[in-house]
Image (cartoon, rainbow, N blue to C red; front, top):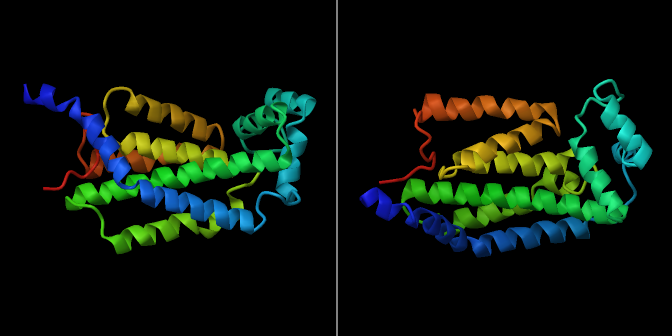
Length: 224
């Protein structure tokens, strides 16, 4: 009976935890986007590897690349090219597609930041101290790799978002389809870059070897 009474409360508790960090996430988003735009990361000339992407998302080239993979001149799977192909067909310019890449990177950063903050709070049984939350804003909002590559017309932003979804859905409380959706995200990540397949090993090691979770329970620390 108690389990039935507590079940509807779990999603509400998670939403409440997310709302507690709304200001943190908004500050990180503002900081990351502001620094990236001021650094000229969106309105710029394409880099060498981006020129390769732009050449592959033209209609004829895109069809030939997808049909011919893996016997092509690129070792990366075609999912990221398909994403940018769709964006191009929607009429987006190079800058518009970079803005989409920036949005994907920002979403990935915010998902992982939220996951870390909730994890810490559940482990300690209280909200993280202000100093830790401020440090998290700086780390996720000013990450050099995210700023320098977050708007790239390459596989990095797509992979970053899918990786964040895999981790979030895998370690979040599993209320039915969440674990299955993490598998879908993992497959899409591996279809963006083959290194995505390597994510499965540490996640399985954490769940089965370190947490001893064979029943599909939540992997969030619960505290005491």
